[in-house]
Image (cartoon, rainbow, N blue to C red; front, side, top):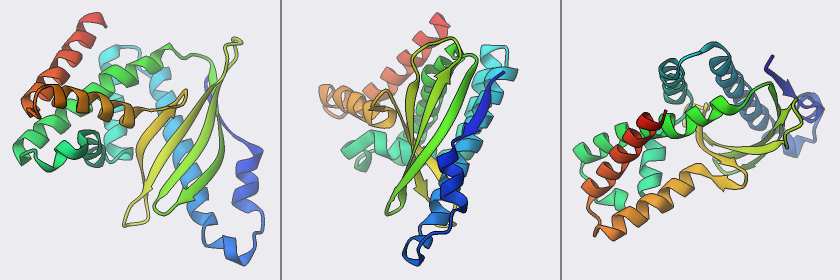
Amino acid sequence: MRTILISFAVFTLMWMPMPASAQANEPDLAKAQSFVVALADEAIIILSSETTRAGREASFSKLLNEKANMRRIARFTLGQFGRKISKPDFETYQALLNTFIVKVYANRLGEYSDEKVIVGKAQAKKKNVIVESRIEFVNGRDPIDIDWWLRLEKDGSFTLFDVRVLGVWMAQEQRDSFASVLKNNRGDINALLNHLRSKISSDAENG
């Protein structure tokens, strides 16, 4: 059975008395850790309960729309080209990117089984919080370190911005990849849109 375990260090951070100078940051860090725990818990429930690929994709899409700022991620992955894109093209791009993320990344989680997620410390820098975690496997497979990059929104809530797996930030990786496509096609956004459509189609055929 998949479970979420919060490390002792998290409880210590959340409940241990702290100096007055640190108390202002402590609630945000604790809230960020709780956000990751809830997010990971929901993801594992999806993996446990959804037996079909279509069901898993639909559930992950809903989860991302609720927990991640997909519009901000879309802007980020366009890099400097985001300043030139028209509103209609951006809306098309964001829709394709959402589908791409769900199909290419969320479905990869289906290979994990009997794992537990250990949530560790959080570090804040301005409106960004990085929360460390580790996936441990009962079958003896080497554990995987996962860092969660959260952004503090104006209303005080957190949203997911990026995930680092095995040392690679996924949104950053996609921005570099998309920048290469755009540069090779003289900044033509249609080339990137077709690139995404091709990736999505290829993943569906191989699924």
